[in-house]
Image 1: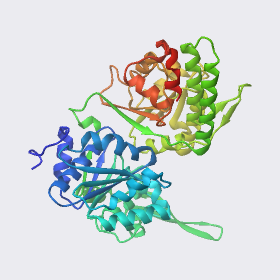
Image 2 (image 1 turned 90 degrees about the horizontal axis):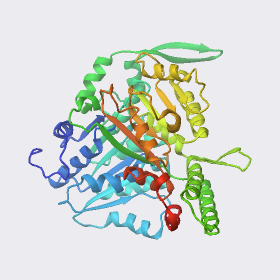
Image 3 (image 1 turned 90 degrees about the vertical axis):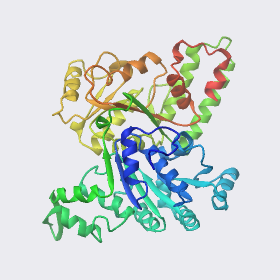
Image 4 (image 1 turned 120 degrees about the vertical axis):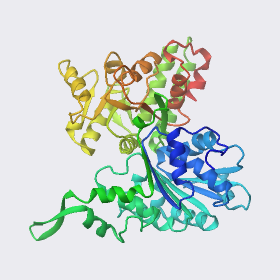
Length: 481
């Protein structure tokens, strides 16, 4: 059946194997490393189930930085052309057009209905109520992308997701690494699929079986402290019954470079400041007799700083602006195995990233490499990053400083927190990980805010356009608007 199916994009061998193991199962977990194409596997699974009459719809849940990618990129790219479909994205405060699209979810047609929702909606009464109505009105597959977002069993969204999951006919979870901190992360993810899969009726029963506990007392308070884990071979065997695991290094037919994106939603404060700066930039350029490329790029960089969560005053001081970008980075790192390079344009961002990673992981897990890094420390940072035995896992660098000449092949994931406008800098920084000595595929993840200069810079770089040498002339309005 799988071999004869009319796929829109031909699956790789590991994707075909994952689909063959899962397509008609009521519950299944795709534990596939970022870059191995788990989104395509899910959409092929949805298509098969729809074509064979098992479902009429799919509810796809993902984090804020990812969920719109499903509607705008993944579904158009991978859903077979012979399937007529309607794709709708959740919006908590919909415009008139968005409200009509949401209401269209309940029209009776023969179309495959795909409803894409951000996981944060499950923490709101409005979001839970709408999703419940959708599930009760259809026979869907319910999928959670980056399912570690429901690893906390006491979180409101976890409880809501598990409860609503009972209304769906088929369940799927997708994540590169289901265990981010401990084997206990698995319980809620598997409970969403089916609470019986792991054989425990509660999180505490699961914890007592797989965790080693010791009673501790502090003053008048006593508690059970986890001091280790046990029965892990048993847990691995249970997972093998309903999951498919693959790493990039196991996929010999994948391209050497894999590109993906994470969208960043702007906060209200960012939107306001961005608009004010944009209007000011256009007015300033219109008052200039000769508009140069450099003057336009200067305005673009000011706007990009706002998108990154800060602005610089005339006196040189940094003012922080509320932003979700750093939160999105930490969420992305939970999906990454092994060592990772994080490139950022601005010193303010590099310092912020290093501090937040040190807080979320350990200070020894991260080091920065930029203009203010002492010359004597630089070789030691590179050596430690390249050493498999070193605790240094995250290399946070400025492309202008670390993007040339270094060998950083210990990483097979590269994140662009912000992009340089210079094509050569981008290409050189990509090659720090993808060069002689790299034995794995490399995944490149670009952060960008849609409909801003972020997106235009990224499109230019992907099209091999160098803004630094492009004469913008009268086109500056197109770059700033």
